[in-house]
Length: 144
Image 1 (cartoon, rainbow, N blue to C red):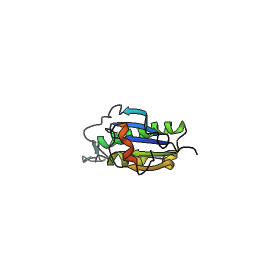
Image 2 (tube, one colour):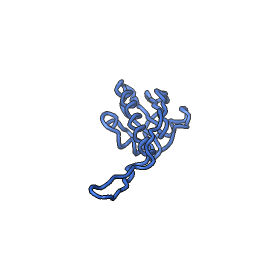
Image 3 (cartoon, rainbow, N blue to C red):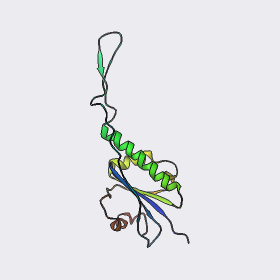
Image 4 (cartoon, helix red, strand yellow):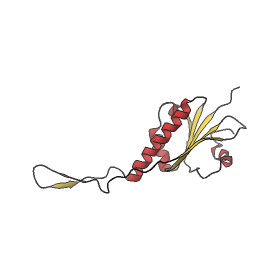
């Protein structure tokens, strides 16, 4: 019987790691690790507009904070990298783990083959956990 291969994504707002599990008894191997390249900087305030004709000026509301925009951009980048790794083939399921806000950003952008293969997600920040200790956090989803 062919072992079930799992691609695991662990992410935060600033870092991410891709790991793989090649089946029971084989543990976890790191595929890639990457950091956020840099934060986009935006104006302090959204600006003002002038109604015509007249002298009235109106302030614009901020649609989202810089932190939200950076988190969403990094989530998109992380999923692009995970999607390319998935496309190289050989994986049967996908699992992800991230803190609550990043997990929401990842879920919102998850599509295509990764969404179809999603076996589970964890609302945990596991970036600081050693690779040898990771299997116990995924016991409910993956058999190591």
